[in-house]
Length: 281
Length: 317
Image (cartoon, rainbow over all chains, first blue to last red; front, side, top):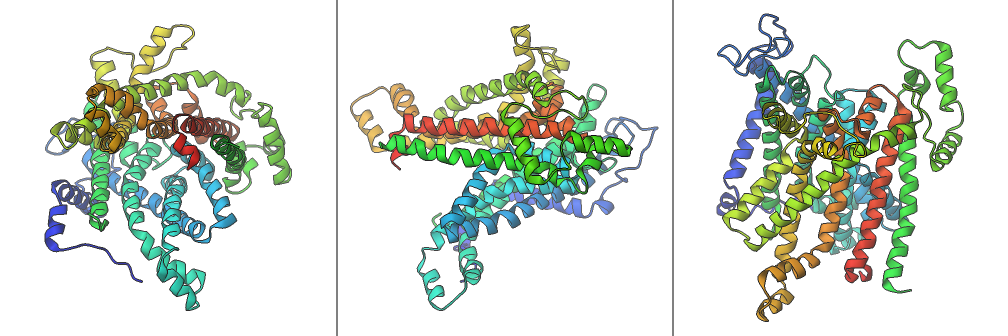
């Protein structure tokens, strides 16, 4: 059975794409494009310092002003988006790669395997996410990649629970029995039948998780556990802005708004995907 | 055994394995350190003697199972080893700093409930109205808002520009209660934004379901007043949802306070954790993570017990 997305008739699709979906998708498209094309789009290098232009207010030369080392804030925002988006994607990818197979196996096999995995998931979910991520990052070594792998590990039980619940429903279906009666192996049944039929709520959850991951990246970088200087990320930019808040308060608005709007857009995208994939809607 | 007793027994029997697994995860954190943990912990320019000293201090030369057993046994007796940086017992550090975290988290939870519940109820009774749409939009913002950024904005305006509240720091509740609360207000608001969003959203959707049920229609038909239906019957029937939300909320706020403490320079266990993680003071990291996870696990157990107490359907199901 192949993955089939119940998209419905074109008119229905158009109705479901309301204004917030359009705005969210357009905004994300701009952010992703700007991040990918950062070296060409950004007017300055994100790490080039200009000591004659420290904490300068917004001007024609520097749209968002300059930071405490005279670096162009607009350019750092564009390059920082790359780090923030990469971090969010990495965390969600790691969470999916760990969580989904574990959850599918637990739900599909049942019995003691499910019990053991269930307790393990309960345990991991009891750790406040950022706390565990800070501890794991500290152990693995400080840096964006390690930090976001840690966040991904912390996310995995959420996806595992969802995958488990889905697998438990799907394994009761007649087509799974049919596949088994044809002699299909467990691996084949899981990969070819259970996963494709369990995937829709997982896609929605993964999309919504991008927003949480983005906030986690910002938090870790803000704490100094993510992107390391001189390279920017939105969270790390806020750390510097905070130090110079009294001298240049406007520095903290652009990165904060970038995080807020991107997280909002990911959530709106998740909502759109949920409505699109929901056959009862 | 009655349904309730069986339910409680089942929950208790799941509680112990989860605690045990949590201790294994916390202990295992040190094993994630690449290479020889003793070399990493001793720092960059450590002498051979210093490395050996660190190895002996944390018993890193013993087999893993022995290390875990000794660590767990010490932890059970309240000994969480000692800090590599300050040489103080980790348990003392945590006890010293815990009140500063507690006052902020408790304040944030109270604020989330005090604002979130009425907001969610008001939205539910006017479902699909403009007001409802505004509450939902506010809720979407609250969930996507980075709490530490809100904290910075609050510090800038409320504390620095308008000078209404202290910007940073923390005062012990025991020495000056009023001052302690004044210092906790901004951090609690910063934390509570996401909490209010979550609580109002959950209360709204649970209450809409309850209000559509037959027994509420019966109550209405027999002429019971609207506010009594809402506050007495409505609230009682979303009790389980509320408890679940509070459980999750405390877990999330304990995490978020780590970042908020950095903004407000609060000497709590969150800032202790971050400082320790950056400086590879791993006994402290393990201690703080252990305390936090135990708080969450115990709260979850209490929440489960309360489920059974307020809603007999939970125990039977």
